[in-house]
Amino acid sequence: MREPNLERIVAGVLPYQKRVKIRSVFLVMQAALPLLLFANDTTNLVLTGKTDERTVPPIDFASIIFLPFLMKYFGIMCDIQVDKRSVCFRGDGEITAVISPHHININPISILDRGDIVSFTAIYWITNERQRPVIPSMIGLTL
Image (cartoon, rainbow, N blue to C red):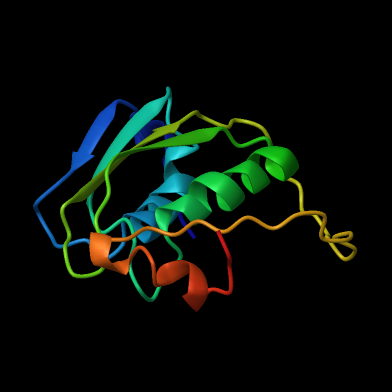
């Protein structure tokens, strides 16, 4: 089996726009992240597509849960900036992911006891002002 040539992964600004329709910018970023960890320098990955798709985790999941988890347990440094949001029926959102190279071994982890839930935060986005009064009652909140 041939060894991959990791020296060919070059960092820089990588715009991935308008070539194909991206259903979810989070899924594309998730696929590119392992490769870009071996780049020779920090990479700015610009993705255009849907930031909040119905069938996959929204981009907020990446910035609030997924990336902090990677940092805490693996030391992987990646930051996301949402430049423009888009919802499920539009694909004109844009994010910039800043991915730092990670040239140390990633050790396996085991998380069997996650502890007690100490807080819960809900985030919701609306595309139409008429939806504003309905949303809190849909998720059981009183404002």
